[in-house]
Length: 128
Image (cartoon, one colour):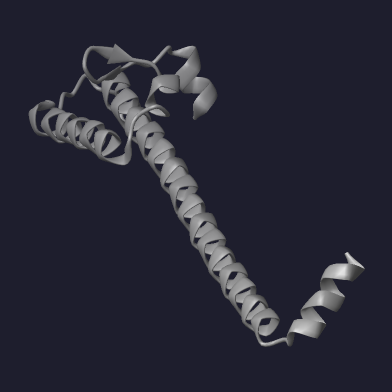
């Protein structure tokens, strides 16, 4: 799919024409907008395409194939970026939990230290 798209130098309509690489710079909402436009174009193409006796059976139309390829590319990029976003959110949640636990440990250590007698605190200080 990727080699075919790159060899055809596919461009996508978004504030002008953009390349496949540019799709990775868009957010999920923008990609969804491109996807919906492509699906609409495909539906309109299906609706207005004329069956002809001259068409050879089994031969696919280039316009249809190109629209479907673009839809597949946008879908793949969307899924890739969504997965990256979900993994990042998971890592942030893990880091937040880690920070919270480390904060609680520090509080408990401070509490334990504050419960020591003056002589014990002097002893700890002298051993440093």
